[in-house]
Image (cartoon, helix red, strand yellow):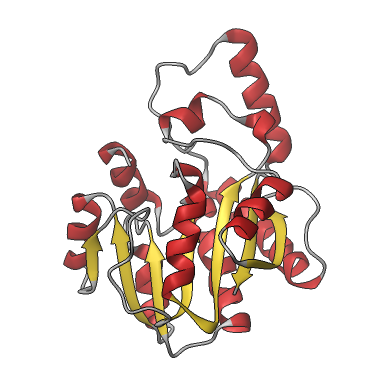
Length: 243
């Protein structure tokens, strides 16, 4: 992660709709599928805000990140079991020790995503599961993705194939963030036609508080649909993997 992007995460993590909506969605899935207590490992902790939430929920949390700055910042927030670690290498935890593993927008950063999933599977207990998000629609791959270090965006088929190759199973997977898809399609199209934003650092668009509240409301409605029926389209995929 670019240090500037970490600073942006720290700035926006408490209130920006995208971060809040994803945290609420993952927290709901944790309560439904793998309720505390138990060991929870997050790969790619960023600003560690999600790990703080998971700790409050009653999990014993462990976090890995490639950036020393992320680990240092997480420790400054009272999280002690954090370490710098390359997720494609064997994880420094006991085999089958984790009740749940959380990988939020991590797999697309990996040159070998199957090895990432194999390492996660090794750390996962037989009854546990992995909650994972990845960006969707390869056709939307853009300079935003490249500058964030993404190797790809995923279709359900590609995602499921990686999971199968790692020896895991998809319990369920669905799209999320459906309500911003039209804006994203327009933005990516404009970038290609007008060659815009090629030299800019990727940043979340700042929006008025009213719009932020509206988007959070949309995310709340979508969250209910995800739990009830799934969502057929959206900018990201979210799913649960099991052994």
